[in-house]
Image (cartoon, rainbow, N blue to C red; front, top):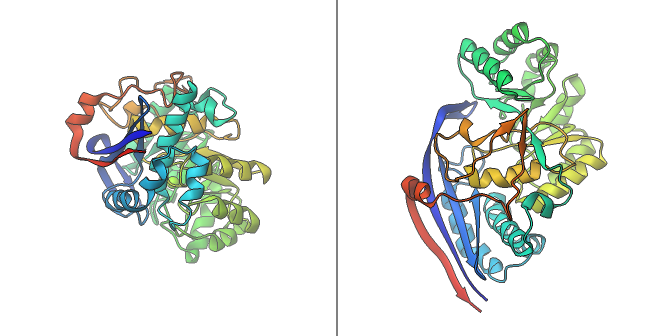
Length: 367
Ligand SMILES: [Mg+2]
């Protein structure tokens, strides 16, 4: 068995800067992984970025953890679930684990000659699409929402932060009283802000996403009991056990599953089962992935357990020119899962080279 694992670090300018409660992002600096084995080439992407602002992981930690601890378990090309069991002794670092776990999903789906969404389990063949809008002046946001609705998006999500919530949500509701609207705070509030957060109830949101701390479950449970707006957890759900605990104590009834953050698709599928068993809802979020990472998200978002519209927008919302030759497009508010084998994307190697800021071979093996 021979194999090679290599990576490219790419820096891709975003079509519009993306502002959340923790900062303004102009580029996506993505780590793209390539596995070549048995005549098959598989790709994946790490959702880490340059800085540890969304979570403690970043591109440098991901590369180090993969190089020192994870790659030895990749070399025998186990199925993804086995790989995750083998690397369980490494605490955390689920973004690094996800990068290799997803490579194995692409590899094994290709071995079976199946599209990834079908290889994963029960696919609807398509994913419901919502849009996530960064923070901008109210008038800009209103016009972006208007355009998004014209384009067919099924749900509108806006980013909010403390002190910048009632104004924007009120303006949106005045203009669009009946749309499916949600707000994402990216952890910007504390439990002391409970009275302010309760005022959000008047806007009839489908849910309020991650108002409190990035690893909190307890205060979210307290908040959920005092608000009529359902709580959706994002940053707090880093693995399966966190999802189980969240339902056990009532921290939220909706989960934003980000495959790249929860350790990959094995864990994503397990979390979606926990959600179903508890009568909750889930959807698939994104982390500004390139067309490579996006393909994994769309395959997951197409699964029957995923019942709310997600953030898997067409590639063109994020990048003028993506690193794949067959980007996803949206039709009637849906994105169809790729029908080709594996993740089904045709990687544009010229575009990848154009965006490249670093590259390296992590391991070449023969066993
Ligand atoms: Mg979020």
